[in-house]
Amino acid sequence: MKQRVEEMEREAKKLRELQAAAENSTSIEQPEGEGSVPMETEDDKALIDSRSIFVGNVSDTCPYLVSPLPP
View 1 (cartoon, rainbow, N blue to C red):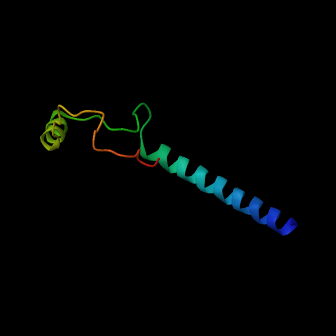
View 2: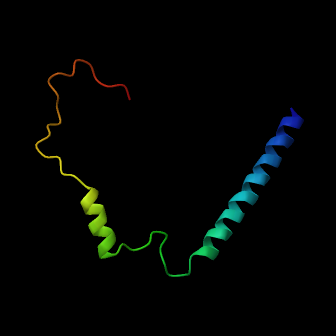
């Protein structure tokens, strides 16, 4: 039992070190004041819109559905 607890503690320490390293590398890559999501330009928005489709007149209910879908 003690061996398992020690193993879990080593794994937890390793995870903390990996998380700290990941946070440090993320903060270095992005300058301060900028969000994690880059701002979209008009060209980016136009490209996204060109790939989008509109689906209208869709009902929430389906009369052909016999049983509810599993979660």
